[in-house]
Image 1 (tube, rainbow, N blue to C red):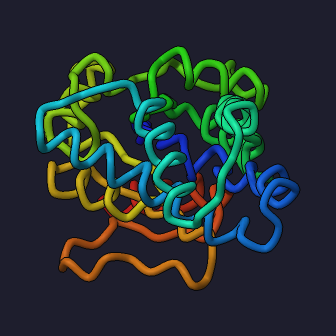
Image 2: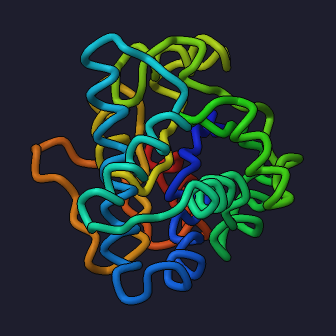
Length: 228
């Protein structure tokens, strides 16, 4: 069976920790907690904007979260340093397993889409930089809906745009909130547990499958299809 696969981008295909080296040069041993706070606030701000019906480009959430982190850590980054960091977010690297995994899934006949809270322009730039654009059938962004994941409106939009159904589509993400959102909506889901200490939210809504790396996905999809 061939599936329509929705790949989350930030944290799943693209490594948001790619800013660490630059941060470390700027602020030393504060870099890791600063980076984690920046990422967590970026997501929190998207959730809050979604609930408030105050949609803005995801890059605004990223910028606001950077400003928050500077205040929280008492770090007085210059406007030039902030511009450098925000630019790095547009050229983040992909994880090492991404290209091989996507190629295997494409060769198996599945339909691959990048599916993100980011704008189409931003995601296209990231995929081009990672040299993986050609492995996708398209890019689906929440900007067309005017809200963020994990709103069910966003997952329904994905199905509409890709002419798929919840039953034959999968959300592939390292972000538990995304996996739970897609599962609650009715899609199948694969949680990519990229680190052993990553914890899945104990909501009683579980992913269809859990994998440790993207290269495990093709075989897992075959096993799932064979059980149907």
